[in-house]
Length: 582
Image (cartoon, helix red, strand yellow):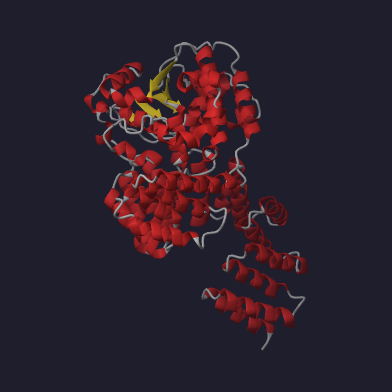
């Protein structure tokens, strides 16, 4: 049998999903033609199909050494390096390749992937744009540019790209799944659900589509449908921690009896230091909490948070440097210019996560003239270069910030006069926000830090931005930074920030919601005292709680766990938090 015949057989196995057999054939071809690059390239493809990207990279590298102009092998090498987390090396490979083949759309696509994975989002967008320009009918390229624009906070631009990708390939499951999130955030919830249902109907065994559909149903408050959807996820993957974690919170104690057995069984095979393993422990903690088994809950939470903190360590030094950098920008009282009110006018709800920001947004969002836009990342993204490069936030920069921020807003109803941005971390940016929008409203949610910490410790957050929530001392460190920064803003922006105490809000909702309306220049509406009746899509951990009638059940909940939280309370700055600690 000739080498070409062996390689044809290898490719046939590969196309049938038979990676091991393809690898055997490729190695046989290597033996017959050790100087040919093609067997090594196919061996790399076989290993990649088996998820062994590190090993695959070695074979692709050998192929490029044997044939330096073998562009496919270079691209495959870069892809394997990206998939194994070696982004800098992948960037080097792609830079060399693009130096020779600048019109190679596939390489620009990979380069954009690489830049995205290393947090270089603007560079990633530029590379994805080159890929789109070279291959305008590639749904893959547009899909990637949409993902990047979404990360940059460009909601309209992201949707435009997804829609273009779907015009090219309306049956693309990945695009249908991806577009559902910005559609929901743009208040186009029925369209988001339609896209997900279509994705699942096209690919019933697509785990990502099933998971996103289930989470969408949670965010929409459709509890029974969400339970069924997560059960469908488990039918595909019996060890799926995300599904078990969500079911533990959605189901009754009786329904969760078998879930405990399933979660413990899944832990036997779950990879150490993995998010899936953490999810399984969070599931066990939620079931233990239902059963009032505090000891079991604490044990599970320690293990869950231990897994997450090892995956996402908190950088103490970096956070203090950011605090100092920002506060130095505003050393004295900020003189707000006399300017026109923006329409719609921003209302920024800031504070610590789990301090009641979602509830505050629901209260204001119940008003017909207010659009609740959830946690917008726009401000942080638009100010990124200003902060990192210490650029001036002068008149030109302010105008550019406002123009770009306006472009990133979704379309709103004609009667809307204000919108809510409830990104809690915007507490760091208050000085910039008031400079840009002198008439904007800043609502700071204040809650007992011990209750906040307990809620955080029980929570499993998406992404790495809240990595401090998985360690008690890290939480205290970040809480102290928040308190110091708010003290600074109070001093340089006197009478410009409205504090809402969570405990008062839940104990007397009509009174506090009326005060919130007055501060925001709104006429109080009765619906504001029953926000659970008006909530639509909530894309945070509070999706379930905010749909229940407002209550005081969680106030003072930390007391039951006081002994387990001494490490946290001891690390709180007594000067900043003394009124809670004594």
